[in-house]
Image (cartoon, rainbow, N blue to C red; front, side, top):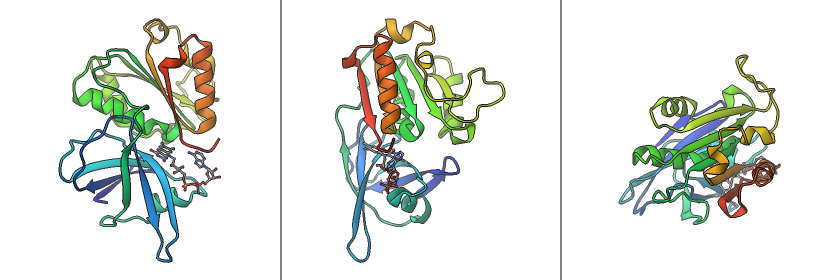
Length: 236
Ligand SMILES: Cc1cc2nc3c(=O)[nH]c(=O)nc-3n(C[C@H](O)[C@H](O)[C@H](O)COP(=O)(O)OP(=O)(O)OC[C@H]3O[C@@H](n4cnc5c(N)ncnc54)[C@H](O)[C@@H]3O)c2cc1C
């Protein structure tokens, strides 16, 4: 690990230098394997948070949300220090990826750390100056739980930038008109017709229960199943 960046009180971005990395697509992930001195091993998947230039000594970024009783996430966010080495396998996943030459608009729906692979898509779009319409809906508990918030606000303010909406499940800013709570059908079907009429590709990512609810809302709103791509992080 070459650097660590706090994103929120409980989530950190880890920068990892990897030799002979041949690049990856926005949405792909790696498997991280830890081995204790007694030989005990634990492996978990982490999405790549940003596009990589590829080539020798690629620098990869993953963002890890620490779970209160999490075995691997707690180690990565609390104990790993700059200079430590990790075992990685990847890039993995060829379905939950955004192809930059696909002109279809993109609807991104994230719960918590499910934003990580979607942020890689947003960053790839921005770095390659691709005009494809992007809309992000990110569900978090409180404003303080928003990862990448400053960057997303900056990108959203640019001409042609992605549209970004945060939904709060527990505590919302006073100016927010929406009552805090879990994702509701109206949150995805807000009357801005492009989300349905333009047949966007939908990427949904987060805890398993969130992904199931969001996918059901999208289907009920008329989105086609073959245009909804999902990635489940586990938990409920
Ligand atoms: C393809 C893929 C990509 C992923 N990308 C990321 C990523 O970019 N960032 C990230 O932080 N995580 C990501 N995850 C989740 C990650 O792999 C781990 O599952 C997570 O870090 C928990 O591992 P742990 O060892 O800390 O918790 P564990 O010790 O395995 O579990 C602790 C407790 O938390 C529950 N739990 C496990 N996973 C979740 C979850 N996702 N949400 C809520 N509760 C949970 C368990 O049921 C258990 O009760 C991804 C998962 C997949 C499958």
